[in-house]
Length: 86
Image (tube, rainbow, N blue to C red; front, side):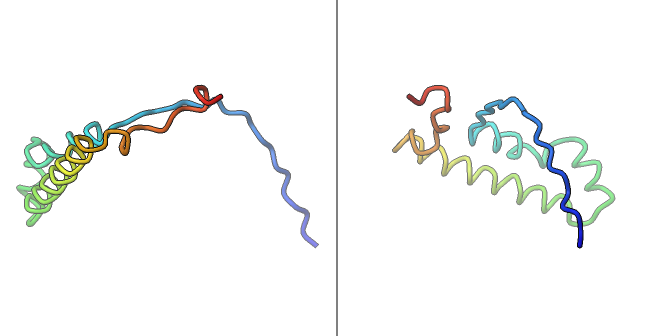
């Protein structure tokens, strides 16, 4: 019979990180134009096309998120933190 492993719980401080769709998608919209991507694309066939597709899709997500925010800003807003709950 196997001995069950000992479980050790370590308290970890919680950190809230609030990122917006703009924070996530905006860097990707410029991805294909970054110099290190262009350098890698020179030696890797098809990479530039995929990088451009990624940038285009990121722009599509960003555009859709902006339309949602314009209609209902609360839908993409971060949830209230535990500290603000009664």
